[in-house]
Image 1 (cartoon, rainbow, N blue to C red):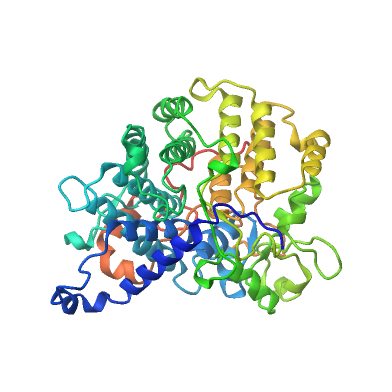
Image 2: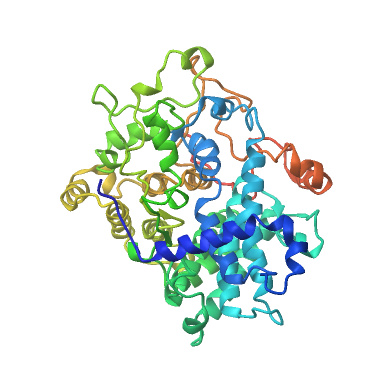
Length: 514
């Protein structure tokens, strides 16, 4: 099995750290006993918490973010039978799936990164402004995913349980975005200081860049551009100047600069988290198969990534499973007859990504197309650079890439500006895979690719009259019982209440009606 392997030297260090973290986590009920032992470890050093926070940013809720919700709403995947209510647009499922997603992210990525921020802040034991900046970047990854799913969420008071804040207020998404882009700007300024290279988390602690401050700057600025572009339709007056600022700084431009987490084919706790679902399919449990829209889009455009992403069905064909089938029609399908993710794509040691150079090139192509923030350049050249970079990320044969760019209509921006925007957005929808939350966000932000209203009798229209859901409802169990009053304030701010078709702040742009 041939897979892409980057930074193999990270695995032993990360493994040791994760083992230490695991051991410490199992001792949380014994803190009082440990405090009486002068030879015992009485607090977790910031290094361990940082490594754990980074791991969480890549791994937390892979299935709920990208398969259960994002993947099904974006028509990338069809998930497990017991998650059918979500695929049928009937809410958050028979279990509190939104609660699993919510609590999993707050209790891992966010809690650990916020604790590192505290430990490394001015006057604290591990004071270090450069490491503090790195922790802020990772925290923003967690917060941005949570707010993009729910809308208003706890932000400024989140992860502050050790400070006695057990009922954090829900901040408005607009305010969260404003703060995130400002924080990232400040983090970039700190990391550009001459001393940064010697004071950031080093190799063995930093599993992404092995202590390369320049790459952290590119990462932070690229994520800032990503957030600013997501918000640009909601508040162009504020975010277009921020986009211009991002273009003036270093960005991720090549795959070696991607924020990447190396995985392992020999240690189960370091497997690519996607592998577990693929392995289940080999045992006859089809937790996730490719959606019909995704497979057909790749087939119709002769996209060479199809052969890497998917396996053929028993008849030797690439076939996707329709999203949203009614119960009667669903019973007529067998998931064994459709395409599952390939063993190479979901290999144990396939690296996983947060954001990629290809995605940034697509944003830059959109910026050039619309001259956003004064951004200039050849939109088509950037578009084709994005496609090339995306395919090279998965080690697609160079001849196949050349042939695709030369012969496929979709590989060249064409038609009017709106059609070119559709092309760029559709490529972003494809390129974001397997992080299908980003594919769903692309559809909500741009309107493309168009997800048709479900009107056919073989499809379930759900509670949205057949329209794609545009958010996830808040948790109904633990969070509501603990922090229900603050959650209710957030619900009251939603037009239409806590529903899956209530728009969040940045979701203001739709594809024009034909």
